[in-house]
Amino acid sequence: MANSSYRVIIPKNAEELLDLAAKVYQKHTSLAASSPLNAMVSHKWADNGPTVAPCLQLHNQAEELTRQAEEAYRQRDLLLGEIVESVKASRDLLLGAYRQTPKVLGEYGFEVDDTARAVKVKA
Image (cartoon, rainbow, N blue to C red):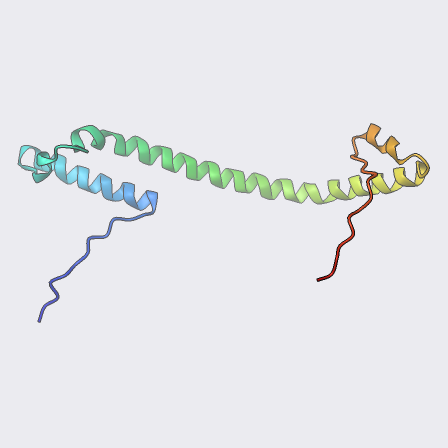
């Protein structure tokens, strides 16, 4: 016996959804007046169809900017390691030089917290 139940999948992924929308809109416009989609009362393709291409373009632009951001973070992280070490070495040197007055490190931009540390209680 043939399976009479079926599902029509609508992608959740934005790019795949926009590709599907473009195909539906293209078929709708090629059928023109004979398209069964002309019966739609709301969410008409006449209103939404022309926005598919600009939406896909904005999606592609966002994806490219995401790739550029990831590359910028990778380049930043390559430089950041040495900078972190310079900051730590500066802190250590200044703590040695101003052992009696560590608040002076605040003049260099460091946050100096002189409150007592909370004691951790073992459970």
